[in-house]
Length: 183
Image 1 (cartoon, rainbow, N blue to C red):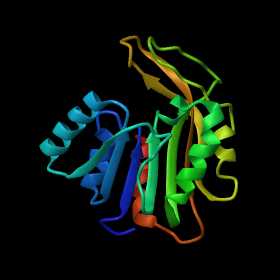
Image 2 (image 1 turned 90 degrees about the horizontal axis):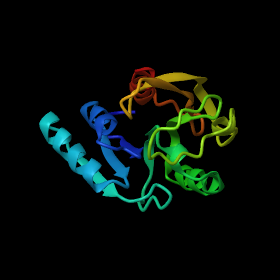
Image 3 (image 1 turned 45 degrees about the horizontal axis):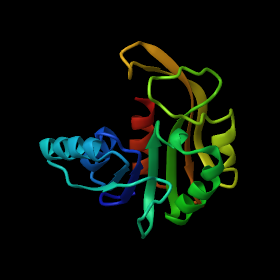
Image 4 (image 1 turned 60 degrees about the vertical axis):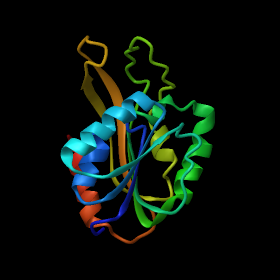
């Protein structure tokens, strides 16, 4: 994918990943329910000299149009109730260009650490991959990530997937995503 390709960052929080993708030269839209988080994200984008379109809404609604080259989420889709995920993933597929990439990291119920105030509907092992059974898996793994969100060091079990729609390669973007997902 060339510079200017479209990226949708779901549950972008305070914008760290959105700013990263924008700094790689992509046209980024960050979506989050927290207006306060998006205000911080905007300050970060300004500090880094990048422009990002921010939307304050639920990812279950995804009120955007057009097609994206990358739909990305890190630690956010597990906040969507299990019964609503099929609808969400169907919508995300319609927003993806042929050859486009989806990259997600979700918490699984292999090992649960309940953070104060968090409402998570953990993914079952393999659940994320089943949403993409007809796409080309570029990377799929389970594991653990370290966290200190509530001030107490702990870890979460996760599944990470990078998958491509159709057969057209998007090597520049997949390299950028792989580097981000590995970090």
